[in-house]
Length: 369
Image 1 (cartoon, rainbow, N blue to C red):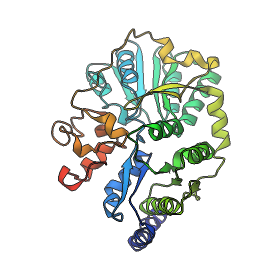
Image 2: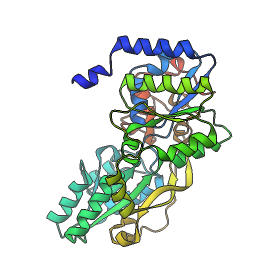
Image 3: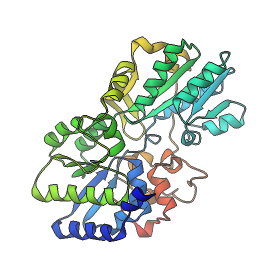
Image 4: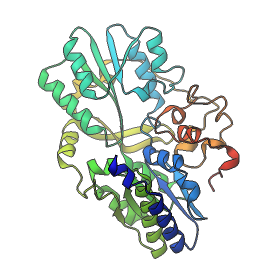
């Protein structure tokens, strides 16, 4: 564990906090767009240790949380069908749709299985040719290459009983939407290192220039985030708006070109609905026409869907950073990780789950301004 320990050094953490305090002359709001970063910030108390006036805004960085209700309701319908093996990562099983979740569907007899990779789902399809195997393919640019490789592998094997229910989202269009909102007070971004490890950061450069916002690519350890915050504040104080890379040990400007090639072959950019943000143009991925036979949404007609959010859940406001979990009347009482009303409380990257795990209460946190 030598490397993680190096990035959790409390002495260096205090030095970075002091350096940030020394250069900050006014309040600044910085948004992290990664659920993993949110959990580190909250678990370590970094957001509460920052200099007065420096505020972290928790953005829509949880891939599970932004998966639209319509996709989840379609997943429940498909999973309940005879002869279907519905596969997913574990944190998707308890995410509530309009009326139920995949874990409940499994309890009622559906063959819902947790896998650790889409390749596991391909292997199930190969081993059980008499069953239809569906994989719920969600996430940001980070998970798209693995899902693309699964489709390519299934195609090479000639599998006709494997398909993806796709709900991929892209980070840059969401950032643009947030910046164009009249309620947006975000002045800089911390970009997710794992997304940039795949896609690089060239897509962020036009956003930084057009909207005059610093964007700093950061890792996920405490010192990564503290240094990233310092770099963002330094840019803001100097009147600069550039893309900088704190996560140099893992990210290159051009990203992983082989992964990008696989994604561009299998997927096409498309309009996408985000839970909490609504429909955003060119903000998601769909399967290319060549691979339409692997599209579960086309293979299974589930009819008209009428998704309904729980009336007490303010997940949309939390995902856009305009509210904190502690602003929700159900937080910690009717909505807990055991009994979640919305995705941000059940997901391992959700803001509500991060606040709950850290024991945050309304009295200890301030609402966004």
